[in-house]
Structure formats: structure tokens, C-alpha cells
Image 1 (cartoon, rainbow, N blue to C red):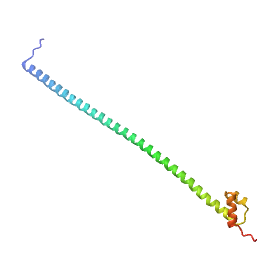
Image 2 (cartoon, one colour; image 1 turned 180 degrees about the vertical axis):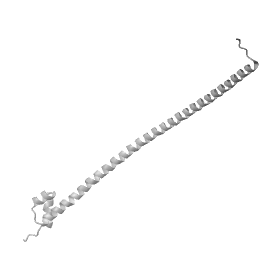
Image 3 (tube, rainbow, N blue to C red; image 1 turned 90 degrees about the vertical axis):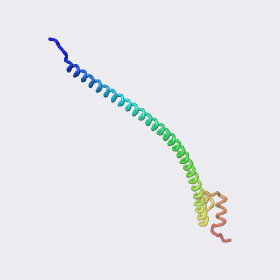
Image 4 (cartoon, one colour; image 1 turned 120 degrees about the vertical axis):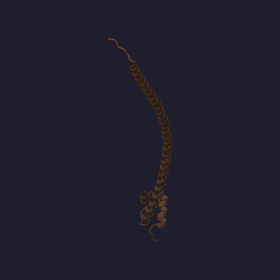
Amino acid sequence: MTFVLEPNDILFFAGRAAILLVALLGFSLAFAGWRRATVRSAERLQADLATALDRLQALSVAQATQAGQLAARLEALEQRIDTRAQLSAASVGAPRGYELALRLARNGATLEEIAESSGVTRQEAQLLVRLHGPKRSA
């Protein structure tokens, strides 16, 4: 048995081969375009990621700077509050001591009692007794 190709068969095979070549060429062009688009997309994504990373680092530096500034301001405020509290305690404590000393002197307490109870010096207690103590009849 011999195999003989007729002219129509040759055209049929040639047509099929041409269609396959055109389809293969179309697929290869589509694949190349898809690959180029993927590469461009990956490059764009990488550039966007680098930009976001740079912005994040800048924000981190800015936040650290602001945190340092806020810490310094808080420390200054704490010192001011402590200073004011100390001044307030000193100014509030002194009049109360003198008020107590004055009351004790008016009520006839001794110099030692006034000095120990109110925190004033012996000389101050003596002055308060002379000025505000009960009047002694001569």
C-alpha cells in the first residue's frame, strides 16, 4: 500500500500548517505583550512601594522629632508645676503658721508653745506676744 497525496490534500495540510503558525504567532505576541505589561506593572508597584517607604521613614523621623519636643515641653511644664507647688506650699504654710502663732499669742500661750506649735522663731513669738498678747495690768 502506497500513500499518495493528492493536490487537494497538500493544500489542506498547508492551510492547516499556516493556521497553526498564525495562531502560534498570535499567542506568542499576546504572551510577549502580557509579559511586558506585567513587567511595567511590577516596576510601577516597586516605585510606589519605594515612595511609600520614603514617606513612612519621613513620617517616622518627624514623629520622633515631635515626640522629643513634646517630652521636653512636658518636662518644662512639670518643672514649672513643681516650682509653683513649692512656692505655693511655702507661701501657704507661712501664713498659717503666723495665723496659728497669732491666735496662740492672743490666747496667752507661752513663747515656747508658740514657737514649737507654729514654727516661728522665738524672737517672732516674743514680738507677737508683745503686740497681740493679753494686756497685763501694771
